[in-house]
Image (cartoon, rainbow, N blue to C red; front, side, top):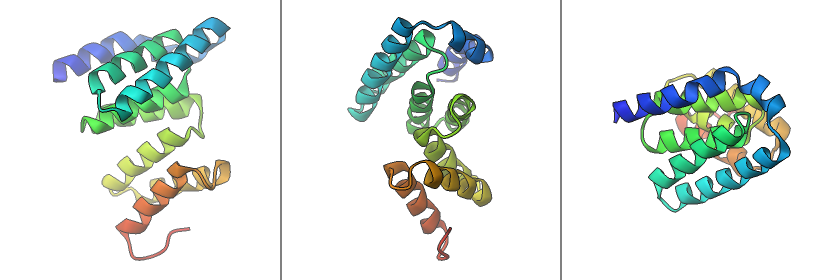
Length: 154
């Protein structure tokens, strides 16, 4: 499994190193293809087809390296596979592209909580509340924070 991760990382790492310059060069057709692939990847992930989800999300990122939603969903994939380091890496890639990406904020916030980094998780929740107070990600991170302590978190 580690070999597969390393192989995927080697293939995708150069894309992220130049994600922002590459984003300027991505045409509308590539962006649309990336969105479609990410949607299919998210559906596969929801259906429990992790292998297909990973492949589709990686294809979405190849089509548009600045697709923050696809990056965040690939983070969710790795989180579902208990590959926390890889999950965090993709959540942070997504947040580099789009600092208020809801799924990346939620995923990174949950990882922060698991690592005992409550202050970081609270910061992510504040940003979620500013950008989408009623989103499911805001509700989920609020619940996760509240379950870690009997104290109500702002």
